[in-house]
Length: 218
Image 1 (spheres, rainbow, N blue to C red):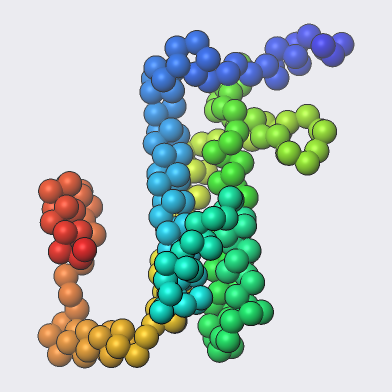
Image 2 (cartoon, rainbow, N blue to C red; image 1 turned 30 degrees about the vertical axis):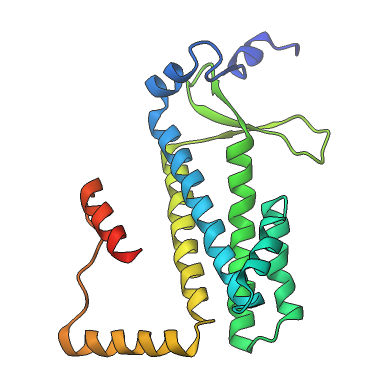
């Protein structure tokens, strides 16, 4: 303890979920918990988007072989490194290489922040009642840092992740086959002649409608 007891009290944190488990989280930080759940779900979706690009890059004739290589990687970083390796081992156009480099770089930035949030211990500042992520660096002996976490901060990460997923989907189109390009051109022509297709996005989504939409897609 320092020589300033008042400062010690001000810098004290209590561990969220330690006494009343889920009830503490639901009662006091349900918004932040929801945002963290969204980040987790969207991150897993991004992983699948990267997987699809890798499958297209390695071999369209032996997709099971490509997927076995990808799925055997133990961490996200290892899988991301596979995509980065494609810049040097796969025949790509300058445009395709630039797209892959962009997606890999942006994914790394968000991966670092996501890892901090998902693996942190969550604590509450005793004086301000503000939620903090207690972040420890695995390669450092320094004391952990307490990073304030708000719904606004987490929403920004959700927005960034959503934009990354869209960019990754667009990157996948850069490796489309001739048949897929013809199909896209036909859809574009159809939209020019009859107007754009109706938007799927709704302000107040309901599960039956989403189920119907996804059922039509898959």
